[in-house]
Image (cartoon, rainbow, N blue to C red; front, side, top):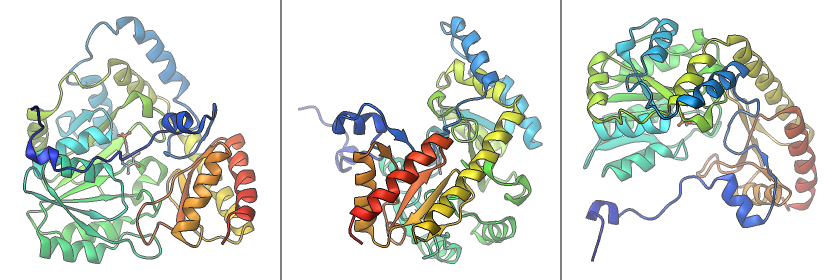
Length: 365
Ligand SMILES: *Cc1c(COP(=O)(O)O)cnc(C)c1O
């Protein structure tokens, strides 16, 4: 009999994300207002599209395994050396490499229950163990709890996203700096900055290159290249050398390399996306107020709206789906009473607002 390794066999079958395509197959809907995965409704930059279109004819060639053109421009942006950057097929890919390299079989990783689930998926898949902190009731990360657990449980890797998903909350520079400084010397902070483009650069953790810190960035959100699968990590040269040992050298789509590079030459487009995203957030806040619902102020491209209970949040999400509006909700207390909706275009926002107004009159409180 053919069997996977005992470690893999012991993993319960889970699907971390059920995609909108699958939901459409299941519901028989032919169209969905796609507001569930914090993708960009504003598309890639026209410059990126033009560059990728032109590159199509060269797809019979592998991309540059070093992604050097892209790393050169990124290095300039971040005031670092190209040797301090690893390009990957999105943050999800880079996260897997970090877990494989720094947690591994029998290792421990600390995260917050209900936070971005891909980390957990990798930790379990590589035979590690998860330790969880809990969100504060206002949706913020509990840095005191994370610190205490780091000391008592001694994880080799501590994960947090800033701005955070699914809460949308943000730790400012001084809070996060003090946290980072207080971490034990042998704990690596895996800092997921998927939404960094939506906040003022000066509010982020300052530029630090130390073996204890790996920062993850992506072209999936503000740059609208989620389907291209490309992101990067900022880290010390020493950590880059570790990643070099295990990363897939032809793992980056050639088209994605070109699209990402062209995106970096279109700041005006990104700024317009960030501005419209801020408008969308304000509209969602106003909608929540109109409907007498609380919300968590967000620094991302999504907003969590309070439905009172986890049961009601689930019912609202399902009812919206029946009406062709796809959103998601946080999976764990205390945030599971919220639904999470991504910033969409004007038409998508209106479709969500109209559907929510109706659904809330129908789903019992
Ligand atoms: C969207 C998201 C990611 C995924 O990024 P990719 O580059 O598309 O893999 C990672 N982390 C967080 C917190 C996200 O919200």
